[in-house]
Length: 257
Image (cartoon, rainbow, N blue to C red; front, side, top):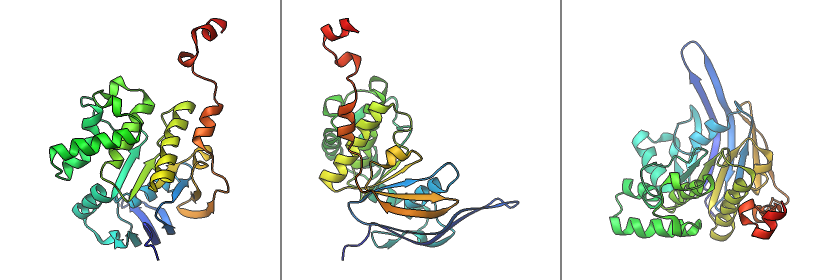
């Protein structure tokens, strides 16, 4: 049988400040198979961000067991978790987290620098990653020269460059308009459907969660539902339904407006 990418068993997370104890996660059990596209959905304070931090090896559970590709992550120390993050996980954040004074190519190279990959190989792999997200022609541009959607594509390329076991996307469309959100979700769907990349997306928006193939809902630190999506929304189809942007219209059409 295929080893699950993620196995959570009895995960608890308690934040203890001395005067107050906050039970952020309560007996969370979750399994994610290779190639799945899973949305973790919940309102603010539901525990979804805490769950994302544990999945991303950014925090350790108070109790329970977390296996990443069969390896017990819950027992690793800080440096060991950092190594796992760099080798096995790719992160995409709401705020892009790009370095402003470096080019798109240089931003994508960053995880490879930390991994000690030689310069020529870094450039080759970064160009491949930018090509995958449709930005090969933008490798020399700085973030200020890119649209919000293009910046998020650079962030996705950076997340892909180490060939991770899983992509973790935390509210990746939170700062984007409708058209750009659909464009970014289309990138995720292509990566999942065509390249078989496992994707876990955290969101509070039901319409964004519907692009996934499975939705896990978290409330008050518990998983309250875990269901497959009978027919996930197709980002390319949704994008095609939108009216063209003004700069996409022919001059004659613009005069009519």
